[in-house]
Image (cartoon, rainbow, N blue to C red; front, top):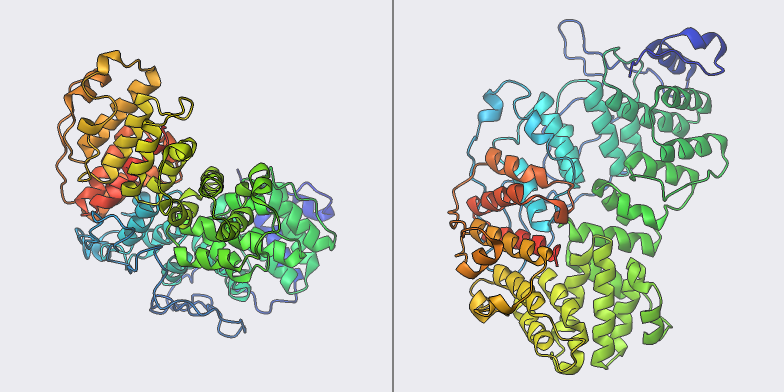
Length: 596
């Protein structure tokens, strides 16, 4: 895509002007933002950064980029961000969850100091491999800690920008913003990232201070240029300059910038008319979208929360007056290990008790939404019947799992399920209860439900031997010392009489590979079913931050069920090398759960 493509709209004499020059006219036409700055660095001498003076940033304290522009300041937490159930800070891996194998060992420095002595860009390619959130809360918080290791914390230039973008993609917006404001230079990529991150924090004034540029270098890459212009058009609107906003939006559209959601929102904001939003076709929800939704006064559609960048969700939870939106955003943040379960519990408690009965709740689609799950949670406070409590709890968990927030619901509803004694008449809920308890990291309680399904009186509710084995395999990985091994499993020595499908054999083959990666012994019977010799148990080797990021990065923004076994095994090895045995087992168990 050529950035100097001519404008071919109804701009009259402007139709033959290049992209950069036309943009310059847009700025010269604007009188609202005084003294626009060039984003080009000085030709020689001086330290002209266009008003941006990076200063040392303490975690949780982000200085305004343009002190002359008043902006209500958000009070950030003393630590960069909570890590779900852990309380770690950058540079030290936290203890997370209830698994005793999660040791919380510090990341080994490995390359401490190397970043400061390396040539610029040596780590950028590594950080750019992190293209989205990690598949589990454990790997998510681990990656955050790795990026905060001493080897990388003081990176500048391309390395620092790539690190900040990686933190943003993971969803740790305060960390990302703190990292990007420390980077020197006035490149388009840096300005675009900084403006975007301030928008995600809800700091529109500071975002506009960054985006207030007067010209763009001809060699600027399209992606960052478009992102910066998206913010600039919004800022022109904020200052009341609709003419400049309309021209910039038109340039963006002509050059192929901005997605359909952005184009609809900016057009509505300029015209003052309510735009038609097709939320089903939207691919993502970015900070600029959220800012424009606020500008136009249009509520953010609930279904966009599942598509949102994790980094924008914290701002939504702080600002949104829509309980359904806040709940959905918090569920995703909790599932990703960015927010604490206590926050979701408190939000659930604020929902008014529903006026529908249990039968209505089961027949409705309540379990499919966050607000519906909160209503079910409150309804269960008034129900003493175990069968109804099980039915509603499992339904709520399955609804959350489909939206990617299964872990959030699992932890809250596990207290309800854990208080019910497994027995034959409840066997129909045994499989759902076991999955819920696995997701809540409570395999010990799941054992009773596995037995209830395995020995149920009702033939329809009774587990097939291979399914009972699969559940026990997951339990054995989560709790290797709890007696869930193959010796007590459903297959035993009578394997020749069990008919296995191709999918069943694939599951057992995967199980064997995971046991080996975890350093556990692989029973001969599993290897026989898989049709291969048992792989040797893997020994955990210490891993430095570079090696660990390289092993974990391929798992980012990939549905855990679609990850190949080879990169998964490498990631498990890297977690074990960092001393995170519990997180390695959680990742392996979640991988098997996706194959049930």
